[in-house]
Amino acid sequence: MGRLVRFGIAMDEDLLGRFDALVERRGVAANRSEAVRDLVRDALVEAEWEQAAEECVGTVTMVFNHGVSDLSDKLDALQHAHHDKIVSSMHVHLDAHNCLEVLVVRGASGDVRTIADTLLGTKGVKHGKLVTTTTGQKL
Image (cartoon, rainbow, N blue to C red; front, side, top):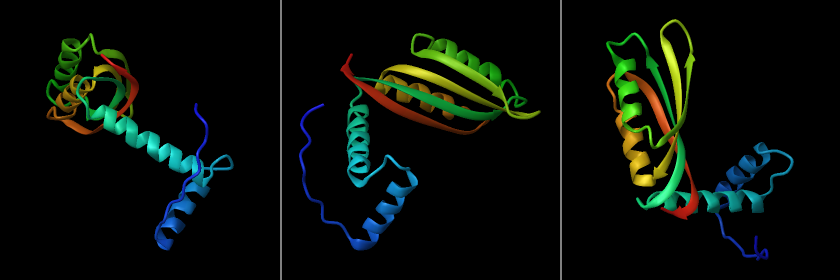
């Protein structure tokens, strides 16, 4: 980590009030500077993630009804087709009908997004989300 540099930010008073409330909710160790650093880091990770050649890691979280006609088989087949990019998976039975599945995916960001879009777009998946981060390395 480099030397800390101070700089000023002009912000609408109402927006600053909402930002301060966010900082306060984060707890004792949080302050405006750390919150701004977190936002900048998030923006930089997002910018790296948008570059299809960047390596990224992420989680694909899905909720689905396991009783939907051959949905589990379709999701399994899609996962096997990408076994080289799916690092791990966890399957949780939420109730008598619904399951939660979380996959850890690693690879070129374009590949990770394609895998997530394919899984989440499968008919019968009720809800899902891809969350990514990056190692900061090119493949």
